Length: 147
Image 1 (cartoon, helix red, strand yellow):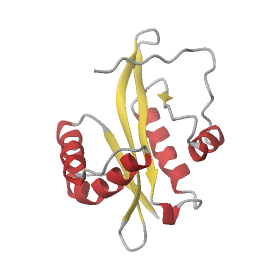
Image 2 (tube, rainbow, N blue to C red):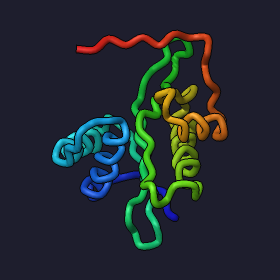
Image 3 (spheres, rainbow, N blue to C red):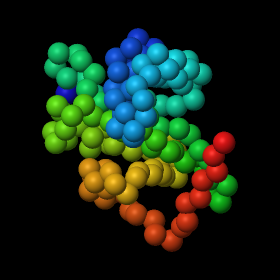
Image 4 (cartoon, rainbow, N blue to C red):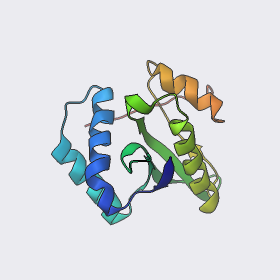
């Protein structure tokens, strides 16, 4: 397995995984929209995307992070927003390795940490994240405003 930063050449392959990820969260398929969205993230350098590539050089998973900033810590802080592994390759350590790539980014960018959220119903994620060093923050309220 190879883990590396995604490039614009990967947009088509990552878009298929990204579309499957969105459908996991009950969104309708939109491969064209996924391609446009990821192409913009990569070309505008809005996010960092790391991919998992199998021996046949097929992309089988990805993690996407967005930069944030902590005013109280006076440092960059990363949001691990998206993590997905093709169902055929789950349970083989791919998610853990992708999270390790995210941790490397945090360290290389001299950030103060990484944040993520997942639905309470995401049993796989809620079992995975504590195993990789994340701690559930029960001291905060999470509020959302949508348009």
